[in-house]
Image (cartoon, rainbow, N blue to C red):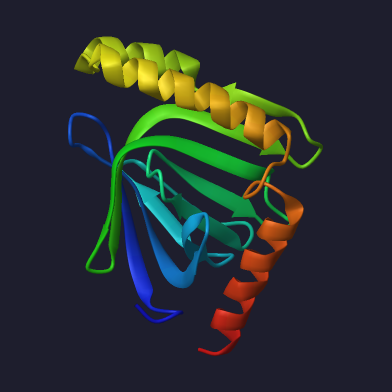
Length: 174
């Protein structure tokens, strides 16, 4: 796939219902996985809601493919947002994943926390998440929380700045 190629990101919930959808651009890959970009002002939609992205965003689909990372440029509300995920796939220009509710967030001031634990518990009961998957997601969330708090790559400033700059280059070439 060529850098700058359009990509559609479609999230769904465990029961198959649609969740957030975004248009992205493919940026490239590195030792962490595949990178995509979402420009400032880009529209994100889900049933009953929509918003425009407040800042350029670099999005990583790691080789492990059990989460998706969003690294935000200045102007966003947060610096790092990690969505725990299941069944992450990138096929024929479409990135799909099941949102597993839990999110690891680092704000611009450095505060790092696990979010949506209430949603995790509610959905686990409603949709009967498999126990082994729940353990794996919870273990991964704890690992990611520590890595994001420590700003380990790819959650560090240099990686964020590199891929935000790459998105800016791709957009300028269009």
